[in-house]
Image (cartoon, rainbow, N blue to C red; front, top):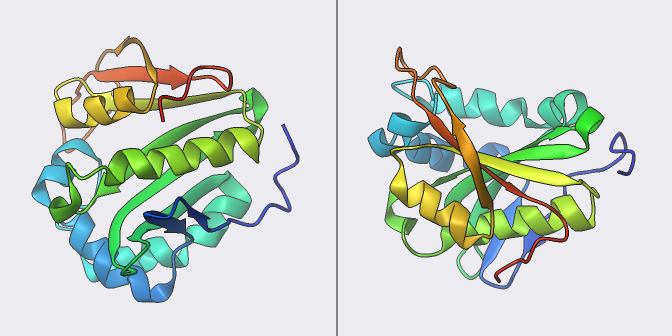
Length: 186
C-alpha cells in the first residue's frame, strides 16, 4: 500500500456520477439527506439531523482524512451537479484495508446512485490507494442496502451479532468483502 500522508482526496467520476470532496455549500444537501428517517433507521446519525450538524461534518472532512484516513465524498449527478448521495471509506493502514459506507438521497434511491458511488470508491481504493481488502457492513434487516452491496460484487462473509449501537438498538450486521482480484461485476 502506498503512503497516504500526501494523498489529496480526488474527484472521481464515471460520466453519470461525480464523487468529490465536500464544500461548505454542500451543507443543505447533506442535512436534507441525513435528516431522512429511513437513513436514520440504519445509520447512527444524530436525530434530528440539523444544518449545523452538516456544517460541522463538512468542516471536519479534511481533518478526518489527514488524521484518521477517513475519506468522505459528496456524490453528485454529473449532468446537473445536484448532490444525490454521500459515501466514504475508512482506511485501516495497518491492515491495508478499508470499510466503505454510503447514503443516498431518498429521491435517488433505486436509480443506481448507491452502487455507482460504491464502484467509484472501489476503483480508487484498489487502483490508487492499493488497498488489499474492502468491506461493507449493513444491518441484516436492510435488504435494499444488502442488494446494493451484492450488485457491487462484495461477497457475504457472515453476521456480526449485536455489532452496532444505534439509538439504543443493537442490530446484527451482515459483513461483506471484496479483494482486488475478485471479479468486479460492472
